[in-house]
Amino acid sequence: KNQVEQSPQSLIILEGKNCTLQCNYTVSPFSNLRWYKQDTGRGPVSLTIMTFSENTKSNGRYTATLDADTKQSSLHITASQLSDSASYICVVSDPFGNEKLTFGTGTRLTIIP
Amino acid sequence: DTGVSQDPRHKITKRGQNVTFRCDPISEHNRLYWYRQTLGQGPEFLTYFQNEAQLEKSRLLSDRFSAERPKGSFSTLEIQRTEQGDSAMYLCASSSRTSGDHNEQFFGPGTRLTVL
Image (cartoon, rainbow over all chains, first blue to last red; front, side):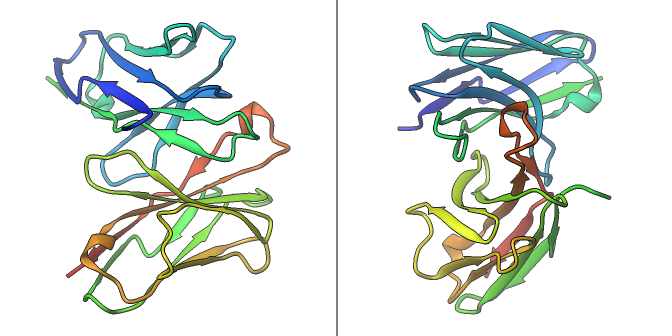
């Protein structure tokens, strides 16, 4: 069973609309939770990093939230753009020096004009 | 370009052949990681180095896989006697313990391996 589960698996929205992606994790304890954006055929690029004590972190139109009690995180994208089309991956790192990252399977987001 | 680079970007090989991939990390990053990503899945950890020392290997890394980082700079990942199940994207990432910011890992563009 994957320790990091994401939903939905895929999402299609119109350009300009907002959307929220969900992440549930069972990795515990953990050091920090990250959201990555991965364009097709490219390596992941970090969007946000939150420690277990942080509740929210923003990066431009991306806002991540974290509820360590329920082990849930979300990534909210505001005013979507065509370039937001990508896979968004939730990643949890172990507390022992951040050596190992556990990746979710990702949400494939498609923005249509 | 001062990011993580990987070579080649694409590799097509026949089953049973050996392949070798190279990763050049960000300059002065002392940690280097290898991941494997299959279609529709998130990356899976394979192994990581701190300088030239290989500190951890995943159970995914069978005896046919070997990784080296001889001088603590670039790294190579070799797969011997490739199988069709080895077809995947192989990602390399690097980080610096001294850079702060939660030991953020910076990923390369990956090497796409197809085994026929």
